[in-house]
Length: 178
Image 1 (cartoon, rainbow, N blue to C red):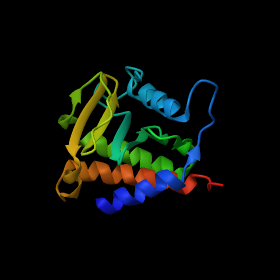
Image 2: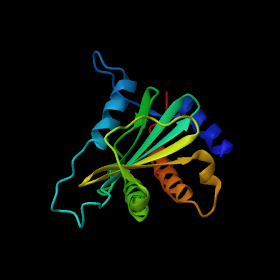
Image 3: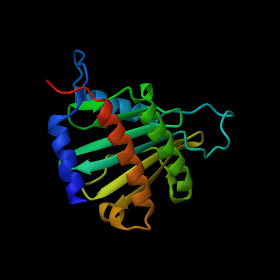
Image 4: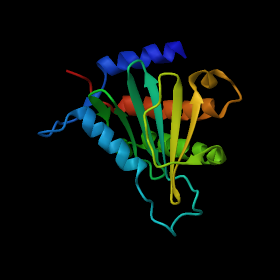
């Protein structure tokens, strides 16, 4: 786990697709707004198999003083948002990203019973990994201690590995930094 944190911390400082900064809004503010938009999205009712069908999953992963948010949707959209000043957007345009995103959503569905409804979306503390699952009936949340990721039989490990696969595929499409 420490290796993954160090690796990603290095990525925060080196590899990222910077977002354009409109007047009055910093890139970090834009990332927070995009995260919130997904978490408060109301999927169309009646077109999904059930009210608890996961249509998007958001993984909030604390890395040092920052939080990385990996988003995946059932339609294959995927993005990386951070509390820093960068993100990787536009994953839906790449087949490997789409496949990883859909796999993450499918894995999340297996653990929907562990979640509880929420309308509050704080970032986790430095020792907590949080997953938000967006469904037609509302957003649901489950959190795990970071140490749970190291346990072979933990749902945290399964979900984290799926989120990591999305992140890996997103990194492959990120343009090199100048």
